Length: 535
Image (cartoon, rainbow, N blue to C red; front, side, top):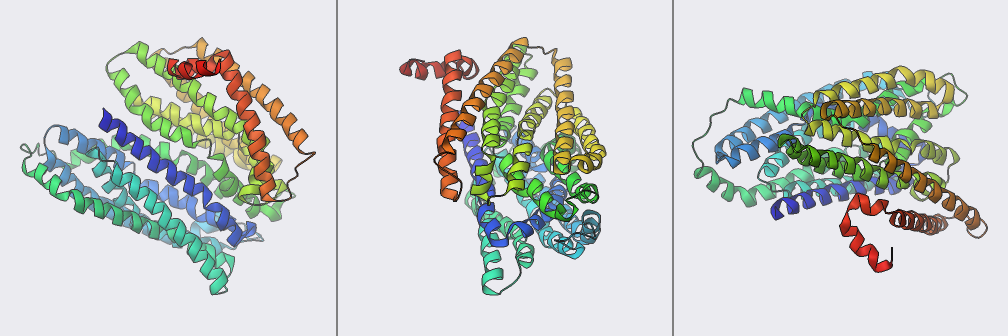
């Protein structure tokens, strides 16, 4: 058990640090290329993320499951045979995906960009898509290699390679952009085109880390293979068939957010073309899909790790038919995600001016889009949690169906709503699509598990009430602070966030502890600490 906890902790820490770096690097990059040009960056990464999902197809996680399964049977030969076949397969699918994205760059750009766009041309967008496509050659087989190590419950290679991949990518991205602009006198657009190549360079850094761990552990793995029981001689075709059935829901879980962004990328310009702000289309889309989106994902980081830990636990209770333990886990999951995500969203919404100023610059439209978009973070957190529960109770097919229905709603509503409400229309369509998908996920859980919980509803209502009180105190604190500290500099914005955030956090924590809701959600262990403070 200690090995499992240690491995999970290492993997979670590596993933968390990687995601934190993925948010922070945007600050200096924004300063380098400017508000007008940073939107070009998201035109490359959204189609890349989708094509990457196709190339990988959720195989690493499924691959680790298979390696672990046959290792537990003492058959280490089957895992090695699958590794050879899998890496070759991933190299082929990766290269095909690279060619597809590279060759379709002009088509995607033509669909995406309005010919009247003031900021970017079709060629600008096509170029960044072509540059980023090279990463597809490397990333798929690197991901599968990580899955092999995880199959041996050896999480360090995955965690370290993810972190090094991100560090190398950011160094190349920022260094390359700086050199293009300040050494060679290039344009910010050229710098962005060069910067997206960082995905491929970062992946090479990750591969080198995996190669190091492979050389380090290969003698041990060879020894296990030599002492392996007689191979079960499972046909590779049968393995891949089962891997695909397991991996498909994981793919949809991973690409849910990029798919919604891709709909915006394809339809936003068309919807905005008849509005008063048609000239600012690329600027607004850049804020929605990149700068504001990066900040919206901050409260969602918790749900990512939470959903990963939830699948095996739900699966265990479901398999053993421990209905009470399963119901208790579901109750706790829904309460915990709302209890932790909602105050973060409320606080960030009220401090959206300061947050946008710190990360980027003072921008009325930027902070407005951020404030309106932040409530969607609750949905971005709930979807992976409800989807993970469906995986745990062996209802994976519903993840795909429910997400597709939500996505079709987004697609059908996006252009009409954008024409009426501009950027708010795109946000509204996202919220509607996600809400329907989550409601359907919960509906399947309720029917399959006969799950009902009026207690969860009551506690969520209490959490909403506590957040309302916190929001009122935060608004009063902001009004008082305006008399003494403005927002002329980023330091002042940081001070405002620290003061107001501290007050809001203290109020939320105090009321939660006094009402006992925190203790009920997190257990009696929390009570031991709160008693020391008389709470």
